[in-house]
Structures are given as C-alpha cells and as structure tokens.
Length: 430
Image 1 (cartoon, one colour):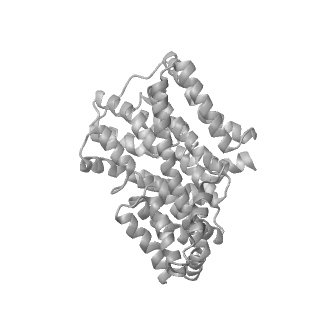
Image 2 (tube, helix red, strand yellow; image 1 turned 90 degrees about the vertical axis):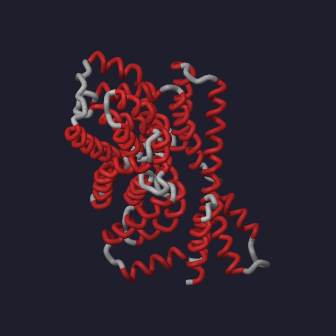
Image 3 (cartoon, one colour; image 1 turned 30 degrees about the horizontal axis):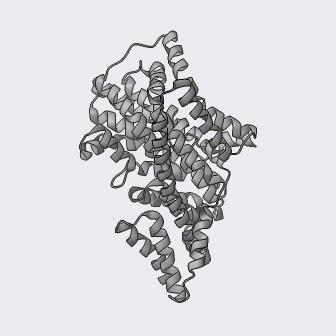
C-alpha cells in the first residue's frame, strides 16, 4: 500500500506543482526505487537505460512526420481550400457555415491528425467566415472547438500511433477502427448545429452548383488525397504506418513547394524548428512513461489492480463504465497525449484480462480523451480557440455546453456497440 501511494501520490504532487509530465513520471518512478532500494542502491544506470529504451522505437518515427504534415498544411494555405470544399457541399443547409465548420474539420482531420492543429490552423478561417455571415462569436468558437476534436479520431491520428505502440496492437487496426466513430461524431455535431441554427434563425445560403463544387474540389483535391495515400498504402501492404507517414510527408512537401508554392524556405525552416520542439517534448514524455511502465511491471502494480477489480467487478460492461468515468476525470486535468502514456500501460492489460478487444478499448479511450480537450480546467483546444476568437472563457464554456451532449452520446455508442469500431478492420483486414 505504501508503494502504491508513493508511485501515484508522488506523481500527482509533481503534476500539481507544475512539473512537466515526462519529468514527473521519471521523478515518481525514482521515488519508488528510492523507497524500495535506498539511496545507495538507486539504479541510476537502469533509470537511464529504461528512459532511453522508451524512445528507441521505429513506430514512433511516425509522430514527427505527422506533426510536420500538420504544420505544413497550416502554413501552405490548405485550410482555405478545405473550407471551400466543405462549403460547396453543405453550405446550403440551415446554419450552413456551422455544418461547413464540422465537415471541414472532418476533411482536415485526414491530413493533420491533431486537434490543436485543426483548432489553430483551420479555426481562424472557420470563425472568420461564420462571423462575417452573422453567426454569434461564441457559437462559432464552440463549434470550432467541438469539431476540432475529430482531428485525432479520423486517421491518420497521432494518439492512435501512440496507443498502438504502447499497447502493442496493430496501428492499422486502430486507424481503421476510428473511421466510423469519427464519422458518427461529425454527424452528431451536425445534428446539434441544425437544432441550434433553427432555434436562433441562422441564415440559409444558396446551394452550390455542380460547377462550383467541381471548382472547389479541383482546388482542394490534392491535399485531401493525403489520408487516401496513407490508408490505401497500409491496406495494400506497400508500407507500414510509420513508412506511410514518411510517404505522406514527401507528398505534402511536393504539394506545398511544387504545386501551390505557398511556403518559402525561411517559413519551412521555422516549421522544422517548431516541429523539432514539439517532437522533443513528446519524446521526453515517452521516455518518462517507459520508466514509469517498467516500475509498474517490476512491482506488479498492474497485477494488483487487476486482481482487486477482478474481486469487485465481474461484468466487462461495468468495468468499461468505470473506466470511462476514470478516463474522463483524468482527461479534465491531463492533456490527451500524456494521459495516453500514463494510462495505456495500466489499463490495457486490465481490459484484456476481461476479454475486451484492445482495439475497441483504444478507440474508446482516445475518443474519451478528446472530450477532455474541450473541458476545463486544462482543455488545450478550449484555450486555443479562446485565444483565436478573443472571447471570455466563461462565454465559451456556456456556448460549448450543448456540444457535450452528442460527444457523450457517441462515447456511449462506441463503448457499448463495439461493432462501430470493429466493422471496418474486420471487413478490410480479415
């Protein structure tokens, strides 16, 4: 019990005082080793080896590639083209630009794989257009924040790569398993937009002609082929998910530099530096989580948790309900990527002991943590959108409250209807 309290208590204390997540996990792990072995027996060489071992992974090379793709897409003016495609398709509906906001986020999700990249890159385009057409700024910001959470659901997805690497499951299956939930998530948000738009009397635009739709697609088709290249390449066996990220990056660079010619060498150098900083921050978290996971396994903490739950919870569905509540609470206070590194080594062996499919659980956990991105007090996407929209935080919270309803309903569907996760992987990979 003392060891358990030391492991989790020290981590919470370090996080509470503001220590970065990666260093907090290293500190908590070291505290346990110090408690069990003493100062003289503290295995500094083992700590160094385990932290370095965590980043020695071919699979994790996909992360900087996807980060670079997202930044490159934002800098090359892709956002406007994607927005125009979505506008030509659904802009004629009641509250059309609200629907355009959601659809453009779904399209952009297949290129960036990041909610923050969506909110920071596509968000300004979405909100500017909505305000220009008479939509409330708070509503525009709320739709933008909620729809940005689709980014890490529809493949390619940085959280899916991380989960697949940590849980030792097929990243391709997690990618494919996220497609239907991502589409359902978008449809749920569009249903709410329709209801709010009717109540508030938001405008209806003219339906785009076939010629206008064709022109919009001609302008935006090249970047929208990125997810097609990734998924088709993986399914055909031409390359692994990691290799797919590199191929997609080369393709995006060709589009940005040779076709659109919207990114200068100076801008590209700045993009590379920002991507390197983001990658380094993630690698520190990965290194810390590797040591933390080793301590969990070394002192059988996961086994003890599993044994305790096995004695108190016998139904897998009850377990999923409890885990959803737990993950939701964690997601309110810890960003999605650190939360994945923290929770995956603990929870995946647990759910597997109950016969729960790890791919199903992975999509459920990622979806759950995306809700955390738009919930206070730490919601990264909330603060990103608030900064872009320049509105009071309280006003944004009031406007986004209704959007929690479709998000939680979709979470329940994903949790209790595993078919929505398994249908595409089983159809294409079995």
